[in-house]
Length: 202
Length: 163
Image 1 (cartoon, each protein chain N blue to C red):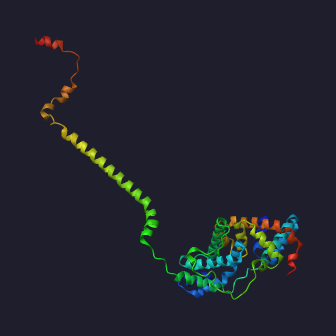
Image 2 (cartoon, rainbow over the protein chains, first blue to last red):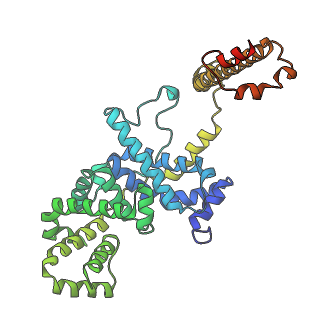
């Protein structure tokens, strides 16, 4: 795919040359879907923010390795998914340790250096309504690969081929993951979905 | 429309709302296959519910935090590399296996070369130890003598004639 066809790839080529404005544009465009993926993986707002931030730092540091033949969003979600997997592994090894824990080599640095101008509620109240809670809980109980497949499937700019590449499996395996994940969600949410109560907020 | 087309429509519905034409195809299929109706409705409801899933709030200063994190990482001076530590922790472990392979190879080659030379010297010794060959005149009647019948005893007839 040429950079003319993918504007994000064109921006990345500028990032490779040290263009911060181009990088800012990419962060602005993708911070929301990356935060969605991060939060629905780690289910902790602070950790999700740190994770999403790490994703973009990683993108910037790896810019020199980016090939414009690759679709940027696929490359970005591959990095995001790998970092999410690392976080899941880290949690399984050190269940009580938070990303906020002070690292030995950073002891002299303040824990929070940035003040957020926007106030936002704790995670529980961020999920608007019962529907979001129900689905979030059901999603959280899915195996990681099924959950990631379903969440990436919500990204309309990603084709099944792109999702498969980000997950590191074939297109048929990706569709199978989505199908199995949705079957579990349907089974779990069946009673709730059939009431139609969740549609009343429209 | 066949089952494959129906499944393709389902996969499309996973991602976005169907077009009017696709909806019409689905309705025709469901009219012919009422047993699929319940599953189709549930799939549609789940798709709608997933579409309604709210976005997670992103802090307003998220982008500036990312940029500052990058600035910190690129500006931070790299810790000085202690050469002894680098040798012990990085180079030495990496060099051990290739070094062992190299040493074994050199020793084996050396042993092989030495054995070949010893064999050659032995061959030269054998050749030099052979005494001088008989003169060619002694071998003039070699073929004739070789073709003579070999008898087990003296030729009595010839002996009596000679007497």
